[in-house]
Length: 213
Image (cartoon, rainbow, N blue to C red):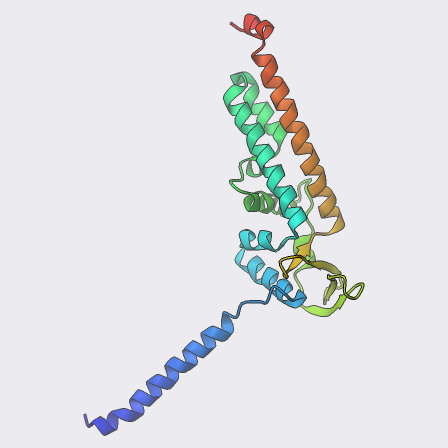
């Protein structure tokens, strides 16, 4: 083939590659987490992927810290039951800590995901975050101005609260009933862990040892 004749082919291939790269770049544009709309978009994308690790990182710091501690307390309590409880008591004691998916979650993000799955299954735990974040944005306003607190109104009409933290990024604030649930589980995790520790002490007391040689 004449080198001159190949030029149109090369030009066409180069154009196709350029269009492909441009299209990929546009499609994979990363949401700007320093803006309310960016954080909202990041959540929607993560939800479509089922990526709860990404969703977890979008939560406000205080909520993530509570989930971290709750998860660790549950893990510690479960470990003590597995290693120190009499065999006949383990099954019920573990069940008292909560559903298996929750207490066996390997990390805080998985623990949060387990809570959300329980909600989807119609069980006692209720997490309304998914419903509130499933529609396109209609309006965004900072209330009060300069506070770093944003109210996002999706087309669904449910208002979503966001907050700008010290890292400069805008983070998600769960609904009030979700915050109440997370706070309650946080408090209960300390109570459960302390109860398990006290039970272990009784199992290793001289009187208990004599009763169960």
